[in-house]
Length: 351
Image (cartoon, rainbow, N blue to C red; front, side, top):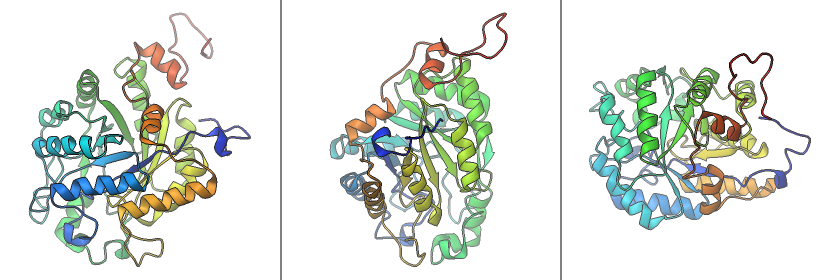
């Protein structure tokens, strides 16, 4: 991405898209009962509260009545149907990691088989987006957690913490290509969740080979443990490699969320918050609800002079429903250099 002299002026930036992740699948409901939903009514109310606070993208997980993360697509269908009525203007984004849910104390946590994970493309009603990981990788969400972060929560349970410490995300080449094919065929936009530049390079190769032909909406996930950490040098190196035509959101965890989101807002990028990412006010002593985290970002955006996108504006920014005809058009729309033609030498550039 390029930053001209006036790139930090709010009038030269897209309106701010706020993604909220208010379903905290890694937490037990008793960790924060004031904010973590259990019943379907509570799941819907979370979405309403966060939308009214200013969020326009809803990152979705759902619980069973016993409080554990659901692996049943029927539960997601039920929630999606109710959300379409309750918050019709929100972009509904299903978390592609739905199939990782600890059983008991966590020792038996497993991912569902690839063919079952592909069934996210068959959700009904269909979501606007499904998040997708690229390249199998470690996802140790415990590595950057401090004792204060997990104080008084279920993650003080050594067995459960060990499950999340040892978690890996299966996203091999064959699965990724097939998943992208199915999502595109279903008219569902993939949202790429990327941990580092090598994963971004893989996405570019998929685009250059025509495997993915559409807008590039992606999130830099800086949570450590196999992913980048929330280091400004990492952040700027990743941003530098993202093409100008992409829509980039920054994500991190716990008390790094607010400062990273503040930097995202200042640079014209987009933000994500919610109890899946963080439970704590900046002082680390008082818990903060997902809706209040959204209101916090809205206040900061107002101070920076950056308008917050409405649901319709967020859809336009994300280009929901847009596809491109082939690799060449996709590369041009995203701002990547074109593919090299036979016999072409030197640097490539768009005419």
